[in-house]
Amino acid sequence: MQNIRVTLVVQNCPVKRFAHNLDLTIKHVSAAARHNCDFVVFPEMNLTGYTPSDLSNAVTLDSGWMEELHRLAQKHNMAILTGLLEKSDSGKIYATHLVFRPNQAVALYRKIHLSPFEAPYFSCGDDVGVFKFKGLHFGIQLCYDAHFPELSTAMALKKADIIFFPHASPRGTPEEKSASWKRHLTARAFDNAVFVAAVNQVGENDAGLNFPGISMMIGPDGFLAGQNIAYENKMYTHVLDISLLEQIRTHKMRYFLPNRRANLIEEQS
Picture 1: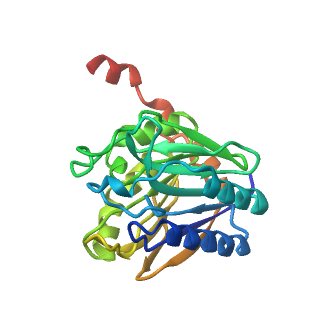
Picture 2 (picture 1 turned 90 degrees about the vertical axis):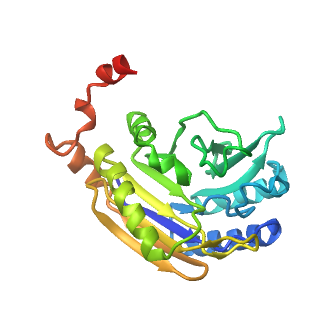
């Protein structure tokens, strides 16, 4: 399988400035296209900004701006992963990440695990989706989702090769966020033999939250493949050697997933 180029966008995402955030997102997509990237991945809720208790910030999935992102995905033959606070047709509020790919309908992932700050306001998603692009299977998890190992395992069992972790994780320094991510995200990659890519918002969001700008790429061997600290809007492109997946998954002592005894776990639950 060919190498895959993944661009992670550390973005400042002020709340209630959807048009501004969308314009910046489009500019980043165009810049990523100039780097011949296959995937461009934005932080959680990059289009709306992150406000767990202010539901007036939520937007519906409007065909106008979605068609523009879909057109760019088609034009540049890339997958665009971008997020928002979604107000669904039923009136429920979701933390949602959208997937735009050429010649395919727009797909979405709704955050499954809500933090204690989000749970009073948002609804949980319930679809452990795995998507496909350029021969690569991928999953999406949003921020707090990353702390639940079984979700990554469920995606790996659905043949995920890479799991993207867009974050809207405030507080702390980039170095502190890096230390936190290294504690659990490396385990998600190593245990399941998948690439892991994470990216956070950056800076003040006009709603009292400040985000440490950071992105991270981890290989299916659990080793850090790249880390980037940002103090402003910044994008980083990583070239993934997809042959590393086969190297890990054909090694008897480095690929654990086929040997898990799921029946025992089910019997104890």
